[in-house]
Each structure stands twice: as C-alpha cells, then as structure tokens.
Image 1: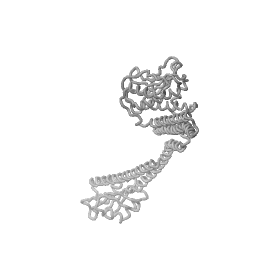
Image 2: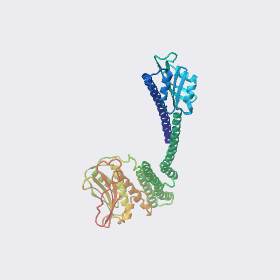
Image 3: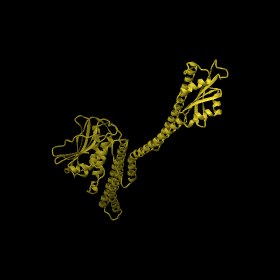
Image 4: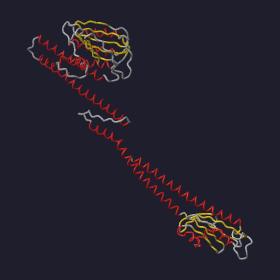
Length: 487
C-alpha cells in the first residue's frame, strides 16, 4: 500500500509541476503576442503618416505619438509608453498603476530604450515585464521638432503569475485529497486482500503435533482462494501422513509385542532343567513360531513403509503362468495339513513386479491357513479379464461368509481387530496386499458367499501403469448370494 501511495504521490507531483510550467509558458506566450501586436499596429500607423483629424501629414513626432496612443485600449496588465525627445506619454491598464510608474522611472525606461534588442524581459519593483519597442524617424518636420520617436509596449505578468500559482495551489489541494482517498481505498483493499493471509497465518499457528485438523475457510475463486485450497490439501496430506505414521508405530508395537512376550515365555520354559524332551520340543517350536510371526509382521510393515516410494516396484514383462505356479509351490509349503489346489493359471505376459506379487499372494495364503482348519481346501489361481487387459490373482478358503461392512474394513491399513494375536495377519497383511495392488495401478478385492467361502485377490493391469496411476475400479460379478467388495 505504501508503494502505491508513494507512486501516486510522485505522479501527482510531476503532474502539478508540469501543469505549472505549461501555464507559465502560456502566460509568457500571451504577453509576447500582445507586445508583438501593439508594435505592429504602431509601425502600420507610422507608415501611413497621416493625421486622422486633418488628413494631412503629421507636423510633429509628439503629435504622431499622441494620436496613436489615443486610439489604443491596452489589455489587462498592459502599458504603452511613447517617447519623442523629452516628451513621454503613456496609457496604462496594469494593476497598481505599474505602467505610470515605469513611465516616470527614467532610469528603468532608459535602460529599456538603450537595450540592444527589440524585446526583452525585465524585473521591476512591480514584478516582471515582457516588453517590445519600435523606433521610427520622420522626414520634413519643422525646425526644432524631434525627428525620432520610440514606442515601448510593456506586459506586466505578475497578476497572471499569481493566478497560475492560485490554480496550482488548488490543484495541489485536489491532488492531496485524491491521494488521501487513494490511500484510504488502498488501505481497505489491502486489508481485504490480507485478511485471508492473516487467516492462513492463524491456521498455521494453530497446527501442532496434537491437532492437525485446522483448515482454512475458502471463499471465492480468486488466486488467494486457490492458495487456501492448495494449503488445505497439503494439511490433509500432512494429517493423513502423520496419522499413518502414528498408526504405523502403534501397529508395529502391537503386532510385535504379543509374539515377543510369547517367545520370551517359551525361552523361559526352555531354561528349566527338569523339562522332558517333549516339553522342550514344544517350547522350541512355540518360540520358533513366534519369531516367524515377528518376521512376517516386520516384512509386512516394511512393504507398507516402502509402498509410496517410486522405486517400490521393479516392473518387467513376466509370464503370468510362471508367477502363478511359483506362488502355488511356495504356498503349499506353508502348511502340510491343508489341501492345496491350483484352480487356474492365466496364460500370457504382463508388466508387473513378480516378487511383490508373490509376497502379496503368499500373505493371502498365510491368511487362508490361519482362518481354515485341518484338511480344508485352499484354492490358488489366476485368470485374464474378458478384454485381456487385467489379470486377477486370488486365494480362496472355505471360511465363514463375511458381512458387507466387515469385508469393507478388512483391507484397512491399521485396525484393531479384537480377535487376539492369532488373527494379526488379517488387517496388516491385507493392507500390504492392497498396497502392492495399488502400486501396480490395480485393486485388491474380496468375494464372499455361503457356498463360495472367501476369495481374496488383486487385479493388476497387463500394460505398464502410468505415473501415479492407482486404484482403478472394476465391476464385481460374484455368484448369486455372494458379497463382493473392491478396495
């Protein structure tokens, strides 16, 4: 606002100075034009050389001068003085009888008469005058009459200069009022412009590690409003990232604490010297099982932590049938008391990270083992979509049918399941599966039905995914009576 006011003040100052200069130049031009006109009229009158009263040539220079002055009506601020020998005549229309004063001031008048040029500018006690003079010489005059006469035309510009200064003062007053009005309007406008900035500052000051929910109110569609929208989006991302970080830490602590305590108890049991061989073997197996659970949890957490990293995937053209076969072979080794079935294997090639896909599918297989009983059938397979743009990988188990809301929340990254430590693979493991699917630009999904059991899978596009592409949707077409939920 200060720069606006300063710029406006400089512009008004320059305008005022320029206007005064223009007006003073106009005063000088008008005075010069008046002097020139009077001098030309005198010369024309002298060339005629005829007394208008007698129609005869003038018999004296004094008479010629007197007759000319009688015919003149000086303009405002103008004085006409004629000099013929010792005789000085004048007609005056300047304020304060300035012309008469000049005519009677022989020193000032002689200085003008003796000046080398025909015109000039002179300072007098009555102010500045702009003057011009013309001299004539008459022939055949009587003996003793002066043959030479001079006419002096003086324009006193003091009154006009005062009027110019009055107008300039008035202009300065108007400019000052306009400047104050501009400053007031600029202050109001600046206040309205800065108000959203102040709100942004207050919101930024209110954000802390305990509360990231503050948002900037958005009004209008201007640039500041768009900035507020951008900052709100940033705050939402920060809040999600912070919540995710806290949940990640809480999840790691919760997921690892149970197995750690179980492993610690098993190790304490092993330290007892009186244990039988069977008891020692059971304690060893329990410690190994808990350590394996901790390892699986750490792997899932590591995958979730890396999921947003651009280098998370290592894409290459991969045989779909080969990946399906490798997953089935590794999954069959997870539990020997389950019946493993390779239900289908897609043929063809697709752009994917086979290692990440295997990790996701093995996590689904471990979940199936956890939520099934001895000799239950677990089916693994893959298939192409009808348009052959997607490949679906899945693991199916005969578990109980899932409710719609339960199926919706299973893939949430961090959730408290309330089913004990044995169920820890569902929430965190399925979150990892969802992260792998989204990183490929695909989706994770669940199909559940009374006769179908539960089928968990992920869809991956066969083409190389575009930068930032994730979460593409596909319609769910489960069997009649089934619950299909895409995440």
